[in-house]
Length: 251
Image (cartoon, rainbow, N blue to C red):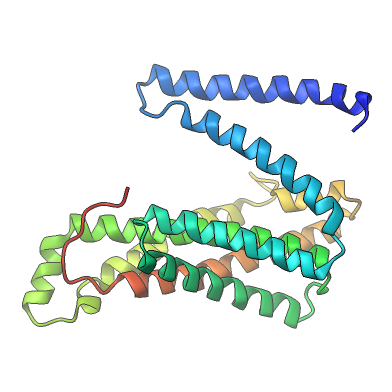
């Protein structure tokens, strides 16, 4: 990086520091615990983006290294989602299989139909976005379902006492957890272009695509997120729905 490019980063650093300060002060004034968590997350994000930018610059045209990069992203996503519902071999299996199934279905639909060409660049962009969103949806589903079962344990226990299977006893709660976990993705899709200009759309335009082509790419991304998220959420709820003993809340 040239000295001129380094100097160009100064306004970026100042802007980010101001935003971090606003976040921290707002949380501190309201007495929220863990006020430094957002700042630490930004620091971690900066380091990770710097590293991944250097790495991707050298592998962006290599299918093998793109596959390795996506595998690393997937592994981290499974670890994060698994930790959110209580780290254990079973939670990793639940999240890993559910996220993998969702991403696989979305990828087959997108690249198998020819909606996007199966190039390393598209595979990386689509894979990273879908994996990240599937991780969030899996986490929300697991946590919503766990909290709902805890809050409505009398209802669940009543079903069990009547001879219902554990999965039947939590079925309505599981369905509600799936619906709740998809609300952010649904709202983002509904407001795209009116309230939100998604990163994929803006990035595609900055990358030189026409607004029409960028819009085509974005709607494919949104549809892929929805499909992967629906499959992921349903599988997480199915895995987690068989509850016979009341558990404590996730960390």
